[in-house]
Length: 236
Image (tube, rainbow, N blue to C red):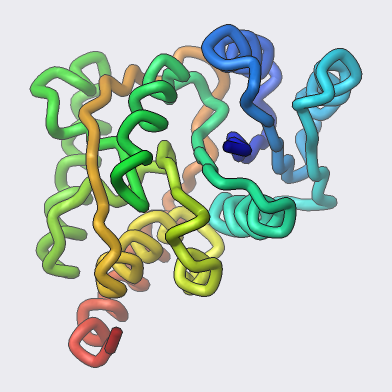
């Protein structure tokens, strides 16, 4: 099976070497596709360097920051276009450990979608600052209550069986930012796709800085309210 790992990047110079090395040690048959939103810290140069050494590494360099959700859409469109069977999506910030990739691949054999869940393990975010743990848990429960679902929907570490999940369904989400993750999960759930979750430990970012801003949180809340009222009218 053709497998691709889609990794959006924005100024991840401190993490990119480690991430690529870890992924390729786990499975050298994986193809890596980086979607970079005009990094200015040397990330692009490192990606180019690795791509020259390894034919399984490819990239798309965009001229400006267009949103992490938009980056995932670009990567998934290319995965369908190039007839990949399996697509894994993950962050480049060091919090998504490639060691879970074999488990994602193992479960995708019997499920169309496999996502990771930070709340199935008791201490998965134990090293996070208290404020971030609190905010993340509030968001988790708020989204699930609002949308009447029971997944950890805001994470990007996922695996899709592209032979089962239709392109139009996986790309139906309209948000191009962080809300893409819960919106796409909700829409796929409404389409009756089986979504399987695996527990993961998610360490707090050690290198670099988060790209999420207060405006992203506010926009997500507004968009979630929109879906709260809309969800009753969404049909399969």
